[in-house]
Length: 113
Length: 117
Image 1 (cartoon, one colour):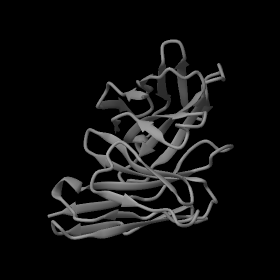
Image 2: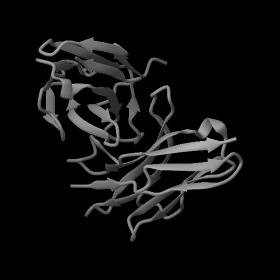
Image 3: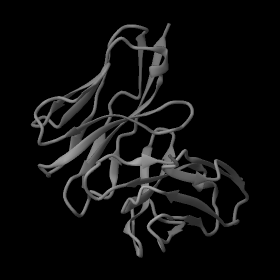
Image 4: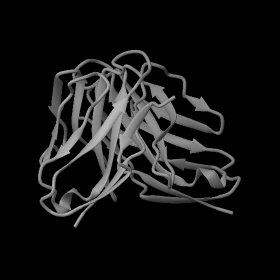
């Protein structure tokens, strides 16, 4: 039972570097999303997707890009990392109808120095 | 836009006792879901309990129960017979039921629960 697989678990970047956080789910969920978690801020939505080929911005999208070429995968790209992007990132997926809760990956702790 | 407020940044409870975590939310919708997620030090987000707004009966999962007051827009979590393993961050979350919002969760800022032996 893989569920939502998120890689890597930890990453250190230098300011200005780029990287992609990977997220894959094997539950055929229509919805996928990325959140960032900062101390005292809860989880805030970065980008989300309601299906392959469809993405939209969440609450804090600046500095991040996403694409959804398949139902299973939803990578998050940092084009030019900044110290303000130091955070814990979560990918989540859910069904459009039926089972209501979101399933989360294990999170990525990203540090930008 | 919907908002979720958790007014208690930190709470503590003695092992075997009961604790209640507060959550209020703001919405103009009548049909939605509410959730409590637990995040232990492992960082994994674990669903504790869910409530469907159209159901008047409060949800219960073993030692976890909610007090859902729709008119007051309140959704508190009660943990009975607290155990050391209950120590974690707890997040309250809202999800719309209809289209145009159901694809995302709105989270509160969390309550850190400490369980004292």
